[in-house]
Length: 227
Image 1 (cartoon, rainbow, N blue to C red):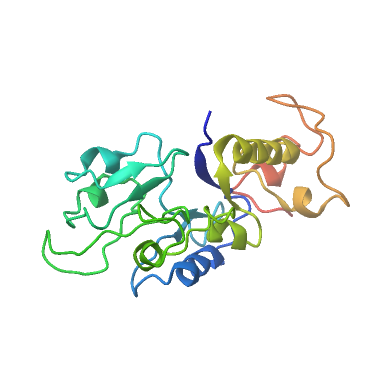
Image 2 (image 1 turned 30 degrees about the vertical axis):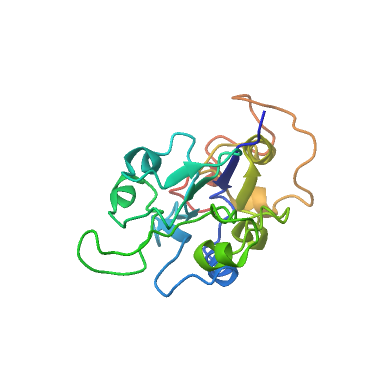
């Protein structure tokens, strides 16, 4: 069975540094105003604030692929969603269909005159021959053909952004959650700094009590600060 390449962003680790955004623009030399990846902050400035790195999520059932009238968007064998700029007519249907705002259009103007669509390619290039000059000019560097990770995931300093085979990165994220001993919204100072060593053997799974999770403690309430 072929691998299914996906992204996962661990919001407990993302620090809104925009290193992934910079890495992507530098790697692919995208035009001014085009960001294939961006960092979105939720609840900015209040308790419970989280940041998440967003780009094309390379959906298995991609809505952009379903609505494209020229069939310029396609799946590769490993599940990466790519597109052909030669077939794109700049209609913008993919832009309206995508829930992540991934499709970008370098040129502004009236409907149907936006220019060719551009989006995250998972650093896998396009339909042109791998690592060719034509491919680089249209889609940027093909790191997947070189046996490397996407530039954004490789550059992430906190390893919040994971990119790769879906089952492998899902296992990494699952281990992180089990090691933390809690679900989302429960990161706290005591878990981060209260022990000389974090991790190790997982003593409890599922909904069972955990040694680093205290009911009613400030670290379990995103609306409270520790005393």
